[in-house]
Image (cartoon, rainbow, N blue to C red; front, side, top):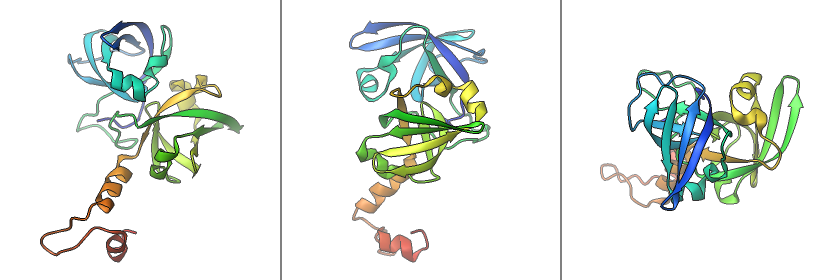
Length: 217
């Protein structure tokens, strides 16, 4: 589990094909203190299992399924990536709850500067936009962000100078692809609303009417 608060950037030091997938060697821009072989590290928002950890370097396998759902297959040597180590129970939850399981890939279609801030506009597959709400949370290449506006197949976010400096968003060009993880809470609510089963104790069925009656909708 992650928060979407990027610890630092890393560099792809090497990659090679193995049995339909890829192995990446990544050099972090920070020391990996107290490393644990097999720990989870999010690379551009994708939860990967790190091994061969030494100082600030580690290796990670990427399965065919992950390659099909993310932009990791686009990475080549010297590319910069966003890195976040897994959340500890004692850590501050500075962003939002992020699983590291990418839902889809979005594309940057426009960027505008407003004073010190940068507005990024993305297109997203229409089947995913129902999970994106104005002022809700979204993860873009592993970065926890707040949605400015959203419409059918599109959304925008406002990036502060600090985020532009410490993440890969400062290098993102129009047409660039990014990994998207929508807020998982919306997906759970959708599944609950779609199910017919209710509470055996009070006979309540979770529906829009039930949520409205209880003040949640």
